[in-house]
Length: 322
Image (cartoon, rainbow, N blue to C red; front, side, top):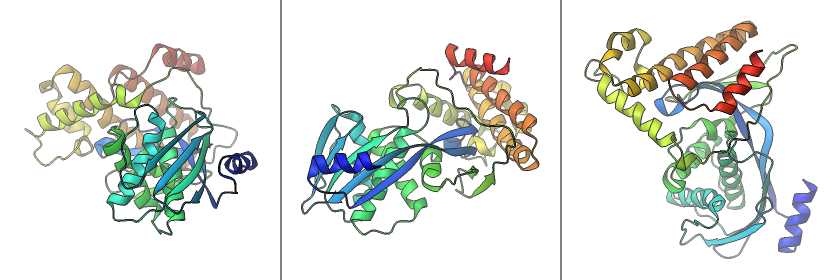
C-alpha cells in the first residue's frame, strides 16, 4: 500500500485522497449458471485491485496503470472506448453507467495496480470495475449500496466493454466476506454466506498459464446456445424463462428433441444447478469428500458437455486426482 501511495505522489504531486480495493474471485462450483438465472458458489480471494485517487477540479479523468506502465485520460462529458488501451475500458465503462444512472461525478486522478492475474479466470475485470466504482462514488460523495454497485459494474461490462457476463463476478467482489463462500441465487440476488470450516483442507488455485480473452472467446456463443435451448424447450415447457426453471426430470423427457450441441449445453447447466445445491449442503454438514466429488463431476461436465476445458486443465485435474 505504501508503494501505491508513493507512486501516486510521484505522478500527481500529492498523497491520494482515498484508496479503494476490490478482490478477485474463485468460483468453487456453479460454472456458466449465473447468466442462466442459476446458482453459484464463489469465494473472494486474497488477490485484489487497488486504486489510489484524488478529485480534480475539472471533468478529466487521468489514470496511471502501474501494471501496464501506461497513462490514459478521458473526459467525463464525452466517454469513448479506447481500443489502444483496452484495460481502460473498464473504468471508462463504470464512469459511463454511473453518469447514465443519474450520478454526478467529479474528475479524478488515479493510480491503479493489482495482483489478480489477468486472463486467468479470477475476475480481474470485475475487481477493477468495483475498485473504480467505489473510488468514483467516494470522491463524488455518492452513497451507493454495494449491491447496486455490483449491478452497475455488470452493466458496464455488458454494455460498454461488450462482454455478456452474468452477475456473479461483480457480486462476490462487492459483497464477499473472508472465511465464507457465497451461495448466490443469480435470479433473485438473494444470497447466503456459508462458513468454510475446512479443518485440515485448503482450496488451492492453480494456473494453467492458458490465457483467454473473454470478449473474443466462446463465452458469448455459449450464452446464445443456452438461450436457444430455452427457446426450444418452451414448446413443451411454456412457463420457463431460463434453464434455471427446467428440472432434470423435464430435461430427460424432452432432451432428445434438442440438437446435440444445444442438448449438451443445457444438460450441463441444469445438472450444475443441482450440484451447487448439493455442494452447499455438503459444506454445511462438513462432508468435504462429497464436496470434492461434486467438483470433479462439475469439471467433467464442463469438459464433455460445455466444452470449455483445455488439455492443460484436464491434465492438471488428472494429476490432482492422482
